[in-house]
Image (tube, helix red, strand yellow):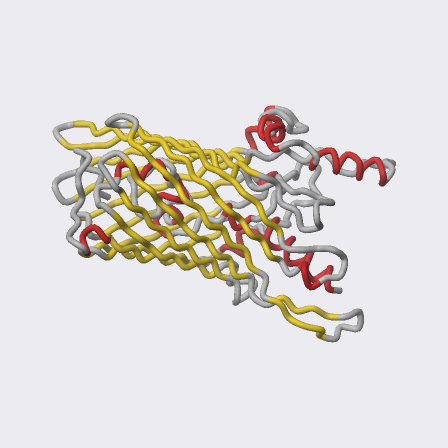
Length: 399
């Protein structure tokens, strides 16, 4: 019973969508530590989970740490809270703490902590009697260095430690918490323009994230892939007048994890199917990344289905009030996560408050579970707080 309840929890977290699973074409890509795929802050999530090519802010660590090189303020910090899957349970929460410090006009360091509290896990014996409780959790700690490579182009490298404790140590069968290390490589382009007599900005970005070791919960018997990911996007902002600004952005997102090809077939021996499954997980990380672009069983059509699209818009008044909206698209054969988002923000002096909200689209269980998810982010511009000012890079990159 202990294993069954633990595996139920893992299934809930790693494969939220359970509709259409009987369809022959339904083939989502599995990976571990799904916390790494949950967008943790409110601004990007209110624009459909897009943020690799938006204007830089204190939460750029998750979306694209290279954006920090274009921050005007010297330093900042933010805290985000996400009550997760509230339509299913009431005790799962994601917390996100991020901050940065720019120590000259070209170089910035940043860091963040994500902590995923998975509530209470109840263990029972074969008769259904409670034998104990456990509080599983996952967290990651990362740091990044970003540098301005030219007036309009920056790059960044991030390093990450990941700890995933799903309560396996409560078992007597050799299971334990998992640990892994990963890195991100990111670039960002920011080009001020002058269109129709008004200021504008074109932005583009790429972030290849979570490239690192595999993770194991059974002392190396099985090594699972981290959700390595490539996010590419573009954005555009336009000043309507001195007070009003509008912006739009779009991200294309692809997991750099091999497509499963180890399904059982009619008449196949169980041992043969198991061997194919082990061969899938035995690939090296580098080999798995390259195979992820051309290994889908249904060819190029299925490869295209593995690209998620997120996009959104943002309106700001006098850089004080913000209204945002967006849409997240994930193909029905790859998880069927489709939802619309809205949000808003208020910035006053050193304080920046943002809120986002998810509307489900479609009738899948995944969309229903994600509906009504709220994220709240509270940021602080420490440069203003300590009169450190924003040693400008010579651009207007204010949100």
